[in-house]
Amino acid sequence: MRRAVVIILALLSLAGGCASRQTGPRKPEAKPWFDGRTLCALDMGDQPMPATVDQLRQALQQGAQRAFASTQPTVRLQTDGPVDAQLLHLSLTDVILPTKRRPPKINIDPSAPTLLHVERFEMLGDPIRVGPARVRLSVTADDACFERHYYENGGQPALVLADARHGVLQLSISKADMQAMLLQSAQRAASVVQTRDIQLDLTTDAAGHDVRWKLLIDTRIMLLPARLTITGRAKIDAAMYVTLSEMQCDGDQILGPLMASVVRPALARYNGRIRPLLSFGPKSPIRLRQACVRGGQQIELHAEFGNR
Image 1 (cartoon, rainbow, N blue to C red):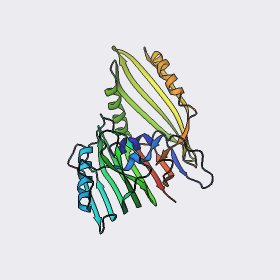
Image 2 (spheres, rainbow, N blue to C red):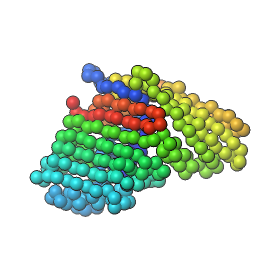
Image 3 (spheres, helix red, strand yellow):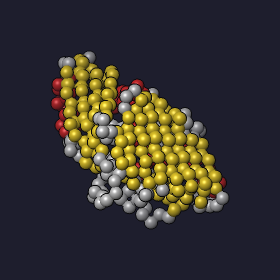
């Protein structure tokens, strides 16, 4: 949950247009570009294993507030029994997503039992604040099952989405906010290099599943200017596999060519890589069914997943 928005935003640079998953033989499972289990990993706080529905709601509430270091997240759980519920709703509106620390990994136990089944799961943020950006996020799932797993550091429990009949992920961010977020990230990571400006151009072909991007990055090194132009292409096929190609870097101004010669080999290693766009694990019944990305002044992602 802590990195849900960040992971989803990264999808925008890899998945372009719309494609639908076809039935038939699946390609051999490979390491995905992104692990879908992190999208709906709900921190359960420091409380002992909940024995009642009210204790579970309190644990999720505490976990959400700790994950975002804020009192803004609210959890609503409607249920008639200890295992089944009608609704699990997590509101993240106006939450500030931490971007300086990496979330702990989750140890997935294949034998973990189902802790909670809900008819409807909702995780909504309108908006969520990610650095200088505002992101509108909606993740919903019907007939969803959650399992209890544990984080690697400290063994704290997390509620992880393990199955769902149908789910929808929607995200929207303005181009200006995306550029501001990329600029802030570059400025925090740099030491000698001073990043002054980043411009992003994201275009999709008429077929709807081929995206090209261009990044213009203006920097200075010891007051000497250097500008980089980074381009690339990503094509998502009907089986939800993504192929990266045409990853290039060019530079101009005084130090641009030198910087480009350093960046270019790193980018070249990604050319030709083919991986599943998103996976919930090799044994999970959940599959990504389709993904749609639109560029322009407002960048939008629509994805559907489920076990059928």
